[in-house]
Length: 577
Image (cartoon, rainbow, N blue to C red):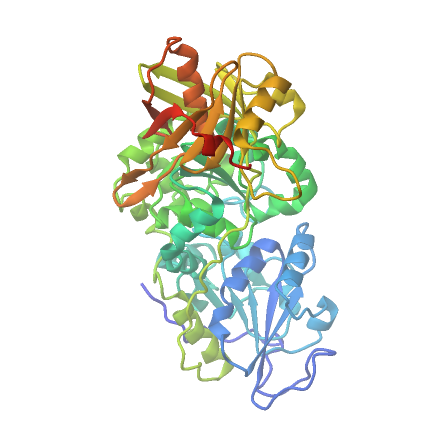
């Protein structure tokens, strides 16, 4: 179904719609060019702001359009929106000035607040996907705010001139819940989804920026409120970071923008600090979350609409919680949660990814998104028709998501569990301090705490370019480390991705050459620190007399790598590190 962008109806009498070229610009905004039009983006929260920023390409390349932003009062999450406006370099109009000024068009992504005070035809966009959630105590109990007559009507008159919806089922739901507004609805698609779909070709770039490598990226998505994943299972991010082998998995947590606003950046950072120290990624709530979703291999979700975007990307999904009374029965989100498996333990991840069939999850998003890839095209036709302008000749295209910049600190200590079977050694590395058998502690000696170094069975140093007048040799540092921390230890220098040297107390310096593994045209290399742990475990179990060279099979992150051990050469021992 497509309702079409034209013919959405007129604003109610007294709404302040201006004639072309009439009225004054906002105070301090400067002289208008002939034929230009003023467009106001009315922002109530960070969530709404991010949606509105995704539709900016509708006006790209058109010097006739003057863009203004105003902050709609009344939201508890306005501070984050204000910061986002500043970061976007937006032209901000104070609310008191905005309500005294006539605009050729007003765009909003939330019906809440005194939008009826603004002068100009209003285009209302959803601020999420699927209209699957209602908030207790706000409006009608059986309706999301974007379809609720409580918010969509003012004094018996529809608030918006156009409801730009993502799917025909949403028009039907609007007809049922707010019949007076339904004639003003059109299906245009979802501009945010189109950004994700257009950015799929950048998946490898995003994974490289995140440092994912050959690991599986598991993304937790948490909406806002008492029924959210983080509210119901606050320890889950740290649990996954601790229990999933770090050479096989990377974990990210996508939080609702309201959580960023309500909790604050500092408190959020302190709350999640242990998990972040273990490798958890926490992307920012604008754009970065979407790039992380494109990069994901599997998604754990609550009833938040982010899961519908993950489904549209065909990512394997597991449900963590059901949304309680907030989830609207029969909504696309409710149908999705019914169809996907429930997460019970980290073991469910492997099974879910293994069972995934391309296209199977994507179909679960069909009830939320229509006109995929055409949202900006349809929206441009709708808004330019209301502006009385011909749109620019160049097509309106989604802006590709920038590479994410969220990173976790590089681990400097691991709890390592090993299994030795002849010359095959399986290695699992986890953050230190977790539950389960330790095996041994491996520590980057010059980066970790002294407490960890004293407890470590494996001490290593990563070679780096020489600076200053003095430097260790590889042989010298390994002997120094064993003397400084006496005991049954292994000291190693990681010379490169494919080479390291190590020694044990009273033993000669050994060279370890690590072969890469090729799979389906891709080359995978392990962290040499993980190989050192494998060699340490094998040497601790091997006979006193070893005939060199020896080749070990190191099972790391689900892949097998060959490591050749032999006495180090004089040149290797003399390398400056």
